[in-house]
Image 1 (tube, protein in one colour):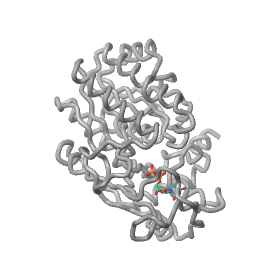
Image 2 (image 1 turned 45 degrees about the horizontal axis):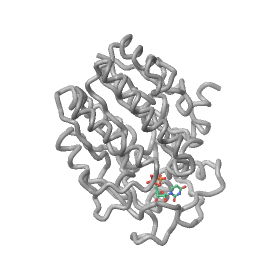
Image 3 (image 1 turned 135 degrees about the horizontal axis):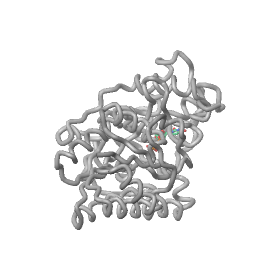
Image 4 (image 1 turned 60 degrees about the horizontal axis):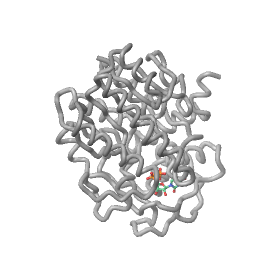
Amino acid sequence: MTVLVTGGAGYIGSITTRLLVERGFGVVVLDSLELGHRAAVNDVPLVVGNIADSDLVTRVCREHKVSDVVHFAAYKAVGESMQNPTKYFDNNVAGTHSLIAAVVSAGVENVVFSSTAAIYGDPDIVPVTEDAEVRCESVYAATKRMTEQILEWYSATRNLRSVSLRYFNAAGAASDGTLGEDWRYSQNLVPHVMKALLGFAPALKVFGNDYSTPDGTGIRDYIHVEDLAESHVAALQYLRGGGDTMICNVGTGVGTSVMDIISTTERVTGRAVPYDIAPRRAGDPARYFANASKAERVLGWTSRRLLDDIIASAFAWHSAHPHGHAASQA
Ligand code: UDP
C-alpha cells in the first residue's frame, strides 16, 4: 500500500511527504519540478513528470502498488489565474481530471485533495463553516471548487472516496528548518514579511488599512504548515477506515490581522519589519477564518502550533534559505 503524493516536492507537499514517511506510510512522489525542488524530497522515491500524463500515472500506480493519492500538484497564484485562466483550467482541472481517471482505473480508492478557503470568497459569517455559500472570486478558486465536484461525482459513480481539505492560510516552515516555502514563487504575506525583514525587499506593502476590521488590515486564519500536514495524515486514516467523501476546513479558528503578523514577527525575531501602507489588493476580502470543528469531530484533528511557531519557523527557514531549496544544492 503506497501513497502517491503529487506535488510532493513543493512547499506543503514536501512537509506532508516527510510526515507520511515518519508515520510509516510507503510514499512515492510525482512532481514536474517546475516549481518544486528535488532537494525537498530527499530520499523518498521521486517520479519527475506531469499529472496529465496518464500512461506515466498508470505505470507509477502499478509499479508502486499505489492505493491512495494525496493531490497537491497545482498552480496557486490567484493574480496569475486571472491573467492566464487557460493555464489554470488546463493544469488544475483538466490535468487533475486525467490524474483522477487514471488512478481510479488503476484501482485507487482514496484521494486527499488540497482545496482552499478561497472558495468562500468574502463570507457573510465568520468563523466560516463548510456549508457556507461558494463564492469563487478567482479562476484559481474556481479550479479548486471544480475539482471538489469532480471528486464528488467520481464518488457517486465509481469506487472512489475523497476528502477535500479547504486550507486557510498555510504559513511557516518545518520546525527543523530544512523544508519551507520559496518566496520567489509566493505572493503570500509571511514570506513577504520575511523578505522585507531580511533585507531582500525594500519594504512590505500592507495592502489596505481601511478595512472594517479592528486595526483596518485584512484578517486571515494562519495555519502552521506542519499542522496542515497532520490533517492529511488524519484524512488518509479516515478514508482507509472507510470514511465517506467529504469536504473539511483546515484552519485554527483564530483571526489574525496583517498588523498582528507584523507585531508578532517583531516580537519573535527582535527585528523591525519595514512596511508601507499600500492600496488594497484587488479581490482581497476583509476577513475570514475557519470554523474547524468538523475536522476535530470527523478527523480527530486540531491545530496545535501557535502563531509564534509559524513566525519562528519561517524566520529560521528563510534566513538559512533565501533562495529556497536552490541554496541546498549550491
Ligand atoms: N498581504 C499584504 N501584503 C503582502 C501580501 C499579503 O498586506 O505582500 C495581506 C493580504 O491583503 C491579506 C493577507 O495579507 O489581507 C493574507 O494575504 P495572502 O496573500 O497571504 O493570502 P490570501 O488570504 O490572500 O490568500
